[in-house]
Image (cartoon, rainbow, N blue to C red):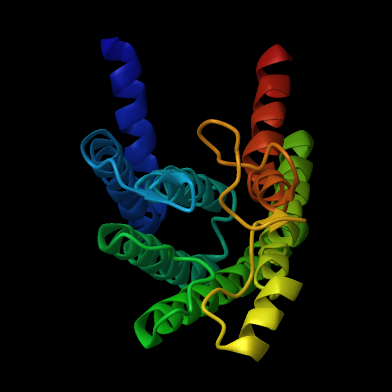
Length: 247
């Protein structure tokens, strides 16, 4: 156990030297995950058919993985100092803001995404959307750097290039969720729209879902391709590492 802890500590130290903001966010999100898991245990409230602290937990672990992965990717771009600095700080700030808003809305007992029921809810949702658009756009700079970078390990080079490219495309699918449904447009014409957009395709959000993820078991769910696209970077990198170890 001790050798494993030493290896992990050295790995974190390497990431910290490469990009301290991203590494700090990754570590902080692990603490946020622990807090969200405690909330799942202590807080019985439900929002749209799911435990209120489930979304903060999912986003905390997702941001932790992405932040630490991106810091690790930066170790392959030693000469792209300015790009790493801009993208690292932008990613750290925008993703932290995203998780904070999700946590605040969970604490208030309401939804964070698609919620325009009040002026505050609409403003928070707009800030989240803008933050993710900015983060996705700056990540394109990393993709450009990867495509231009020469790699000693060609398999890892192609894994990172293709992985991040697919991740950016996967992130862009999130925009499909923000389109108002026919029912929401009808509600807007009758009174006023309180929810704009949805995860589920063919039904309202909140139906029966898979344990842990909440993905709809009865209808289409945009979160599935969104998730697969977002984590392509980790999957491709893991395959390249496995190939390297096998060789």
